[in-house]
Length: 221
Image 1 (cartoon, rainbow, N blue to C red):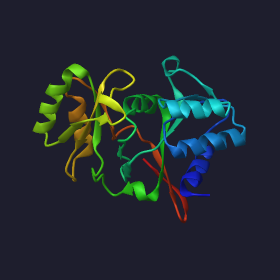
Image 2: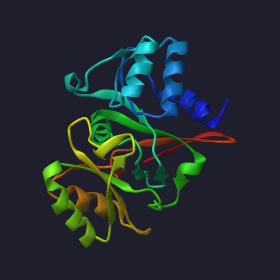
Image 3: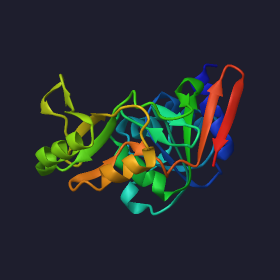
Image 4: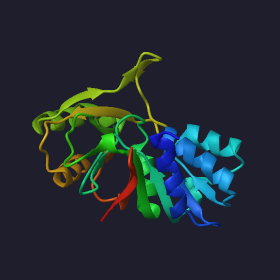
């Protein structure tokens, strides 16, 4: 069993039968879905990830539309980095706005990671991702430059033009120097008009389950 599988299996202890849970994206979440099925847990799922939704359907788990749910018992997700204060940075998937919504709906929002992703303080080696209104692009880029961020509008070789989210918005990857006040940075970025949300999570995370060669341990507030 690899570290991601060990981490996913440990998450079962936080899931109660006959509840609604939130699931993010990524391979660890994929393992968790398999374990939920094996365990025979009767749960309903909300997710911002199309891939996760399809995996749930394949395993016979009922997926509810997020707009019909106002609270979930527990939600699980991954991240690129998490520090000892449970400040986390997510970059890759571009679905952080929906992920943060589900995190806010959850009584417990738990990150599933291996120990390579745990740092004393966020290093900002990965970009902070902003989902922004298309009309705000030039204005947001100007504001980011004034904050010392190096911004790049996300595009893909698989699509002509900029990457567009499910809501028709742009994604902007922003690199910052190490040593940021993460709480203040999240607040300042979210205050820029046109920014819907950012992939920096300084409030939402309640726990992290960390898999290492020695076993799985918990970081909690």
